[in-house]
Length: 278
Image 1 (tube, rainbow, N blue to C red):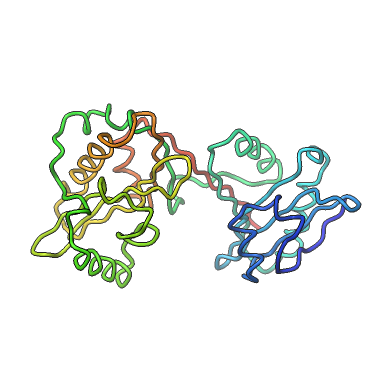
Image 2 (cartoon, rainbow, N blue to C red; image 1 turned 45 degrees about the horizontal axis):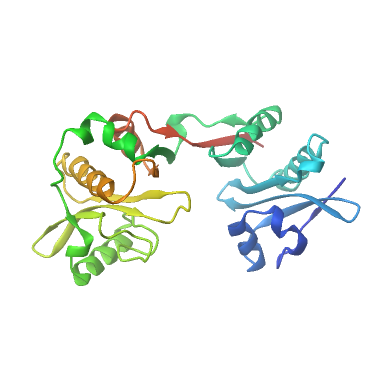
């Protein structure tokens, strides 16, 4: 088997071996580094990623089933390290543990010298839980629905102002903003005073497998605002969707991670980051 650099542009026969978003970035000429594994005229695998400051983030790694356990993955990694040596401090792999195939990658990474990032080092974490499990947790099962106004009852002008402020201050926003087409405005809630949005919690349908808690923000110093919004959000969502609906939740800071694990102790952490220093 041979390893070569995949030129920028449409990846052609290698497209099916690359995650769609990475393949699209490569086709658009974005700064993606991609290595192709071939055996004769057959496309056997691809490793692709991009620079993040002093680190290289692998965004796609796939070996065709017929070519696994034959050293192809190691060849791709070794060639990547030769290219990056002296230019970056580490290689990182961000994984979502939602499939058995993702889990099978862990022993391979560990054999190559990757170690799992500790909780203290994490910038963000992804959790998965069903809507029914959320509503069974004591905090959500014991409260009333009050605590927020659905986005459908808040004016576009107020939502537009909230979006502009969030962009200026780098506050979290769902994909497409508070008025994005994937946002479920019937269940997403906000705290509004005098025509100004002061906090919000948003559910959207950006994840094909279920729902995503995509943005939670509060400009209030009152520590009970966010938990009350989350409870109102969960109860409204439970009235619209069945209990077995999966919900993906992103914790984007240590504070939000701690809050999530306190309110939803049964949530399963499905994101992991593995690192190898160069």
